[in-house]
Length: 289
Image 1: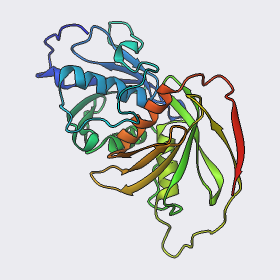
Image 2: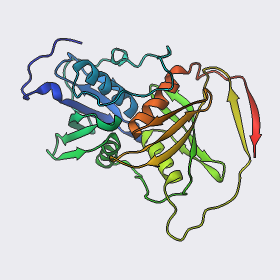
Image 3: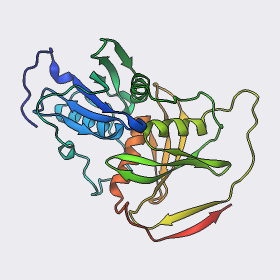
Image 4: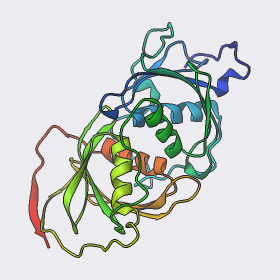
């Protein structure tokens, strides 16, 4: 990273320009620009953008984090690097995103998430957010994404998330529960948020919970091979985000998360530590009642 240059914007080190080039299938693609960089950093998913920005926050010591990021291991296990130096550089000349250009100011990192505001440079409107989850919702609305979290759902206490494919920080798979016949597919972080929310949100007033148990076939893998399976419980919804527990079943590790962002980074850490996603793992199939 080069030495910070003086920008036209006062205290420019606090601001990031997010240039959005694509949102097909709600996979966020674009570049991150900052006054301390000679070039932009390309991201191919919302998670990769979060990794890039978290890395920049740590290098610049702004904004300071209030708590340490939790992970599934007491010490880091070597896997694929998530350092911003691995991000693809784009040309030094700044380019406007074909879908939008935004100025992001993350002022605080309380509760393992972000607080700040984002300005749409095309219309000048500023949106304040209290969490990464609210920032996600802003991008989804502004870029014309479908969906949005439903306040009601199936009223389950937990759900299982299986990451079946992982490439360039983009996860896809399904969300399920033993008492729900249908598996809910997700192909991006926005789908993941909505499907977990639908599974765990309360039932509509007057609705009754189904009592069926669906026989299920699962594959248990030994070692760091995909797919990665997680059991997620949302215990509280405070500070404009989620708090709960996430268990990585293959490693029998459970961690409490304090925000949706922390849960997402925990899943990414597990996927980054897993190898050979393109290989067929040896496993034992079992039918669970």
